[in-house]
Amino acid sequence: MAQIVYSSKINKIRSFALILIFAGILLMYGGILTKKIPWLMVTFFILGVLMVILSCVVYLWIGTLSLKAVPIMCPSCEKPTKMLGRVDACMHCKQPLTLDKDLEGKEFDEKYNTRRYSKTKKSEENQNKK
Ligand SMILES: [Zn+2]
Image (cartoon, rainbow, N blue to C red; front, side, top):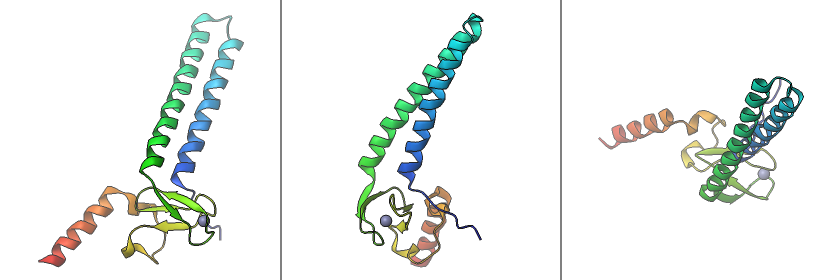
């Protein structure tokens, strides 16, 4: 059975930004190749520049995200890593990590980060109080 490997969210966004930069450069290169057709060249260039700008925005966004991320020591590889949200994976060994004591020992699931989950959890807590 294939094991699903969860990669750290910061790493995921970082590789997304890298792909965007390459796509932008490729599009601009496509623009050079099609310089005989001016409107096509302009379209390629604009798209390429937009992608590069977008990836810069994504990089800035990663920067602010890593400031918000919680730095922790990974319990399994003992390297420092950063966590985003309720559950995340270690950047080095892909070890699933959680900040929520209630989720400890439970199977790792991205759904714990969704708004719906925290809502149902809150309403459960409220019911318990009554
Ligand atoms: Zn680790």
